[in-house]
Amino acid sequence: MKKVEAIIRPEAFQTLRQQLDQLGVKGLTVSEVAGCGQQKGQEGIFRGNRFEVKLYPKVKVEMVVENFELASIIDVIIETCATSEVGDGKIFVSTIDEVYRIRTGETGKQALI
Image (cartoon, rainbow, N blue to C red; front, side):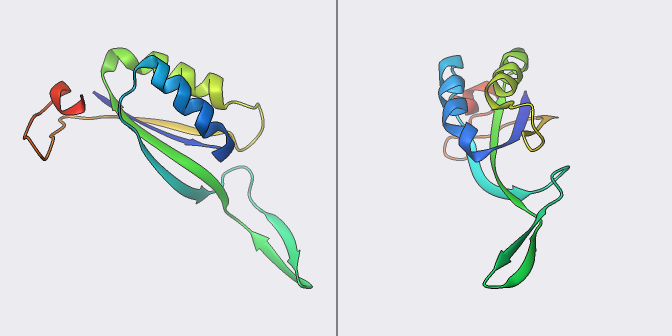
């Protein structure tokens, strides 16, 4: 199994959610996060005071999937979220050794369903 973590633009989330649903992705964890990369930040003025904004709002979408699903999920994330501009985000893939459902004690694929 693989854990996919995608950091994306907030405005891309609804479309991505619909596309993942069509692929049959059953479970997601979604968090509002903030960060910066090549964007670096920008300067603003509020009530005459200058300030620097270093973090941008993003959405972090996490899911654990079977190995055979990984390539199609990555393709959907890239196709849905790419604008070809700095700040589109990142995808991280990690190996998951085991999954447990707390309520029933089920493990592996059964715990994901």
